[in-house]
Image 1 (cartoon, one colour):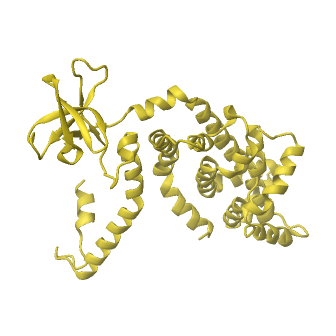
Image 2 (cartoon, helix red, strand yellow; image 1 turned 180 degrees about the horizontal axis):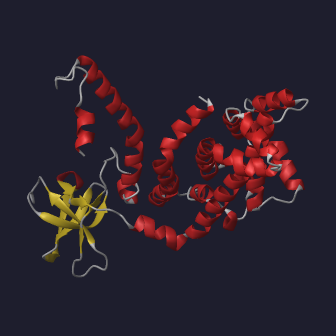
Image 3 (cartoon, helix red, strand yellow; image 1 turned 45 degrees about the horizontal axis):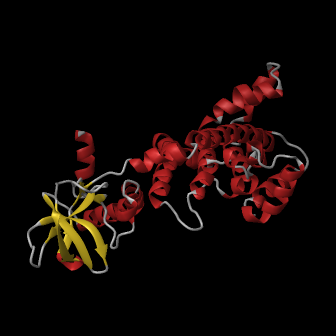
Length: 351
């Protein structure tokens, strides 16, 4: 902790006095932290708000809810208001009904006497309240764990297949000399510039002919090889000395054993960063699963999230809660493995 505080409070001059460059640096860093984390924090706080609180303007940061109290003679708890002006100023009353700009209110201790109060003379009594039911309703109304399993299965299997296929392609392009190798590499690099949306139609037709529509494998297989992954791994594998491979061949090692026992372990940093990127791509993928999957039991979390938005009504409280739950796994993966992204990309020469 002491080392962290020393790092955070150190200055350019070293004597404890802040230079103007220190002010600019800290201001820039704080602004960056605010810009990155403020939307996430606002999302998390909004996921604990009720529908009434979410519809208020101007919006508030913390989740507040109006207090209610049970009154004799009424089936439902009634909202509490503080009267700040008018004949009954200073009283705390509950509202039984409202007609236009006039509210009918009663004293909770004497509900037999009904009072007519202008809506401009009252203010709701509110307290801090976290609407945990936004999360509990998700498990009651939707098969959340089915969607979670579909997303997890697609992410894990697709990442494993993509790493294996890309690593084998990168090994061939980096360590084997054959006619057309440069042309193949240029073709791979050229496909990096082709937008994904351009190949959606032919990819859909191929998937349909293979009978993989409305199947999780229809989401996994088309992304088994990516030009980004091949290029990333190839750039790292060319840094592995060829003498190691020649020595293995002199020891009668097969090509598969060289790939599996030598190349893959030595390429672990690049494979780690590609795995992290693949997990984020697959977990957050929305467009391709939306095209391939039609039945709700095959939906991923991203598609289930989209189903909360109806034509006539949108339950924003549940939608925001679902968004937070969807972000948690990928945020956890990124939090623990983020240091490998920068070091891995730097070691592969990618920018």
